[in-house]
Image (cartoon, rainbow, N blue to C red):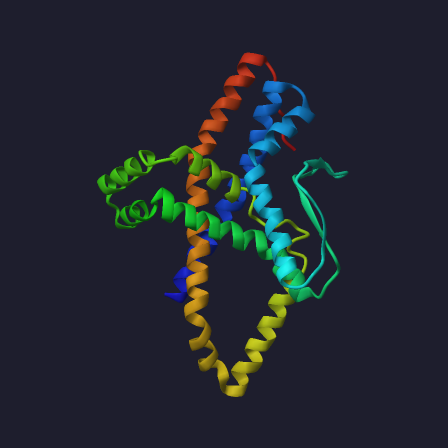
Length: 252
């Protein structure tokens, strides 16, 4: 069961990364084709992603404050970086040890996944749809999806899940302290195993870790499913606008 949870997480992670990158690039492309002004397209795109950006940067600030790391300037104003990449926001924090740095960097993923699980299972009601899908019950799946669409505030909730899920992956700078923390955890785990505490350690952490991995995998799966529904819509819109305007966006 424990290995199954990790496999589920890894299987969902690859499509999540690819779909998130595609959605970010092509949504910006659609706005660029419509407005023909890169700066205005950037502003409108950032406004669409604003709930997710606020949660991303706010989670950095909250985690830093909880861990006793002083946080400085906070911004959700989009900026094009010198290398051409787009930065939708940032939080400045003081230099700290790699353990707290890694936890602060992981905050958007933890907060974002929690928000998706709460919205998805509490308000959207994705549980019955997931169960029907797992059992191969097509009629049950259609009935569950119909109930979701007919629920209160469905489109608002879908928008919030979209904005949060496509903003929760940590950036390269967020992941800076992760490898050292993972190495430390690995070394400590090996040391405890050879000291004879392996079974005790596994029994103590297996349940909580498995629950956390399953929750994260569920959040990834919801995001992948939502983006898979969005991709053809964005692709068709981009093709239609490109055909009407005679313009085309070249992606590098």
